Figure 1 (cartoon, rainbow, N blue to C red):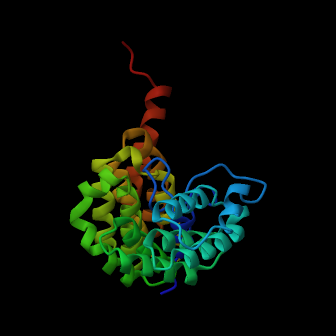
Figure 2 (tube, helix red, strand yellow; figure 1 turned 180 degrees about the horizontal axis):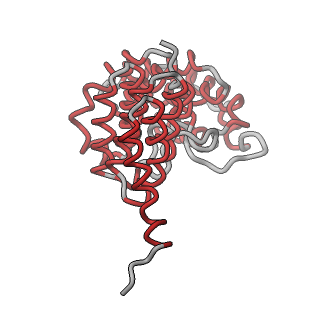
Length: 284
């Protein structure tokens, strides 16, 4: 089906500095992003990083890791081409595949808009280190961005029972974002709503309400009205009273559109009740 999710999944991969939709994996929950957070630089890579290209081929792994960390720390859209070249040079000197290096190359490829290259690197990183939650999440998110939501679900399935571990690693919100989007892409609104309801119950403060309202609007625009209604209802039932008031107008409008006028009227009445009580106070 023609689904509206893939633009959002690119946001999952590229992170909050580039788009306003939810970001994905490998950073702490307060800054979820595939791309390592760093100050955006107007210049190229530092002289220290450029100098690493002249190093000898018998470097110790610790030194190679230090150079890798330095490159990743400066990885930004305006340095991605230089970083990719530096990473390729580092890969030659490393002499054998390294999952952290492959993940960094994937991030550089993403910043250059090369999703297929990034996906290949993420998959190679996961193959080298199949126990890495970060690599699994990145590979899953890249597959979802490529339109392969079923592959994404297959990769995420083993993590469903490891939410405590992911919470400790700081990537639980990223997993939930990917899982819910993949279920929506698979037209499994029940599973998506269940996961969103659990998220709202466990960590309501970490759910970006406006993002999921926007997702419901995208479903509605794609004529997936039942899915949009269920998503909005899940939000309305799971948030506090103030946030609920931002969801109800859209839910009431959608109910009206689907011919469920009585239910829509009840929601409109709920929205009007505070104004009526304010304008007609009960005498003491």
